[in-house]
Every structure is written in C-alpha cells, then in structure tokens.
Length: 257
Image (spheres, one colour):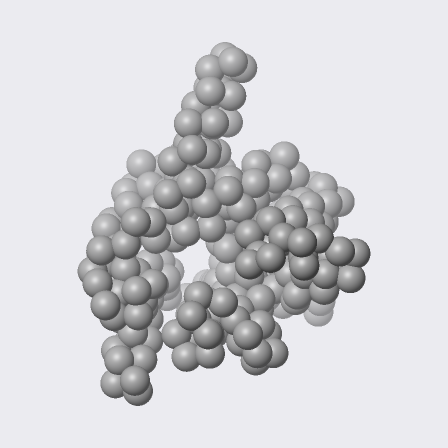
C-alpha cells in the first residue's frame, strides 16, 4: 500500500493510526484499573472502554506484518521490541496486580509482538512446509504465556494470509472479530449463560466496536504512508510510551485507592 494513497479519503498515516491505538490502549487499561469489579467489567462504561481497547492489538499486528517487508533491519526491529518488552514487564505486572506485585505469570504485549514478528519471519524464510508449521505452532505455544495470547497468534496468521489485498484484509478483520467473539464466550464467567444467540450477538457487537473501528481506519482511511516528520523520535516514542503509561496509570490508581 506504500505510496498508493487516494486524495481526500485516505488521510491517516501509519503513525496517526498508531497514536489512536495508544489512546485506545490507555482507555482499556484505565477501565481495568478504575472501572472493573474484580477481573471483569460490570458496567456499560467499563464494557465500552474495554472493547474500544480491542482496537489496539489488531492495528499493531497489522502494521507489524506490513512493516516486515520494508524494515531496513529485521534483527534491529525485533531487538527494539524485545528491549521494550524487557523494560515493560515490571510495569505490566504492577498494572495487572493493581500495584500489589512486580511478578505476574504472563508476559506483556511487546513480547507478544516479538513472537508475532518471529511468526512472520518463519512464514517468509522457512521453505520446508512441515518445519514451517512446527515452528509456527511452537511460537503459538509461547504466545499462550503472553498478553492477547491465542488471539494475537490468530491475527498475525490472518494478516499474513491477507497480504496487501484489500478484500482479504477486510475478510481478515471480520474473521478476527468472530475469533475474538468466540474467545469471549468461551472464557466468560458462565458458559451456559454466554452460549445463546443473543449473547453471541452482544459479544460480536462489543468486539466490533474496537476491531471494526480498526478495520475502518485501515481499510478506508489509511494512506499507506508513515509520518514525514519525527521518524526516529516517533519510532522510540511508541516503544517507550507502553511502559510509561502502565506506570502512570498504576501510580494514579494507588494514589486514588
């Protein structure tokens, strides 16, 4: 899509959409800290902010898959994500435990994105099909210990399949919404309560609020370009914003509580 922008409609560059994703991520984490009852949302504001936060993961994974083909150094790209993951783990643990512990059994989203990048790398470079499948399955198993776990694994495979084909990208976002709806129902507090057509439709609508907005931004408004200014600053800003916002939100929660 690089350089194929259409006048007027496609006015959002890659960094603008990443900025929106960061705002949505903050809203999601704010909801978890300040609006949840325990580990689950129980009010409409909590549901709304939580599901709008679903905008972030598919957008970041979409850009990761897209960025694989034009990054100057894939090793440096992966290294930056691993560095961001390492410095984010304690802030992530603090947020997940609401400030009670620096230890948490799962790993943060930067490690998820690192594994997603490895999946793209394997899909591109490994020619032996059985070996490719085995390696991707192993990476998927590692993702089970990370934020967004199996959903991230599904998203990255969908976007690899879609490539730069607009129709396939639309299908990939639709499939992502359906997969997330199924996961929401499967991991809800009551499977019997969730396993109804009405509950499925409600879950689907909630998931579409975030994933659907991500699809609209990318399919209809994304210019295919990055920002023309602040390249290196923006590059590192996106990596450093993640641990910083986790710390700030957790500190605010502890001060409020």
